[in-house]
Every structure is written in C-alpha cells, then in structure tokens.
Image (cartoon, rainbow, N blue to C red; front, side, top):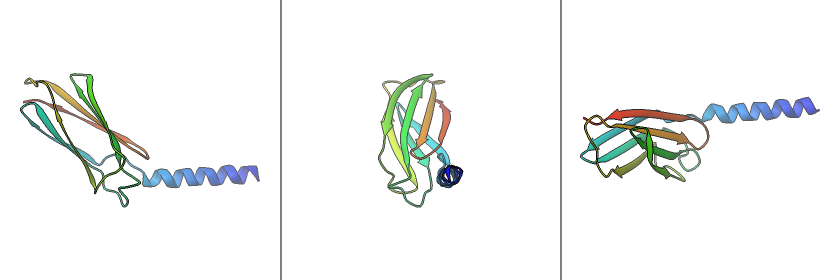
Length: 110
C-alpha cells in the first residue's frame, strides 16, 4: 500500500511538471536609459500558470526584481528605467515560471 501511494505521488508530480515550463522567449528593446521587456510564455490558464518574477541585472549586479501574481495573456510585459546606461553595459533578464523553470537572456547596450 505504501509503495502504491509513493508511486501515485510520483506520477502526479510528473504530470504537473510536464505542463510547466520556463518562458519560451525573452525580447527586449533598449531606448536611452530604459528597457522594455517582453517575456513570451504561452499557457492555457495565465491566472494559474505565469511568469511570477523578472530580475534585472546591470553588469552582474541585481538592480531590480519585479514579482507578478498572474499574466494577462501569453506574455508578461515590463518596463524599467535605469539611472544611466553606457555603451557596452550588459543587462541580464532572468525570469521564473511560478510552476517550474527559469530562463535568462543577456543584452548588450549599443
């Protein structure tokens, strides 16, 4: 009986994880000292399965963390203003799915 319960728990955990996934793609547009971020995360129910966190780092230093409690559709949008950006600065966008998975992408200021 104990083995059956453990087996069923493992199957349930696996089925939940199969539907969970990190962001599909991270896009960003850098304008002067601002960045517009679009995180593509197609899901069937964006109120229960969504990107819950976007962390922005500038030159390997975390400068801002934004949390979310849902998505309106198949993407999560966010804009951020930096104090100052210089040519060659590295901006890292790190995202987290509330169920499972992380995706990150680095952008260089031109």
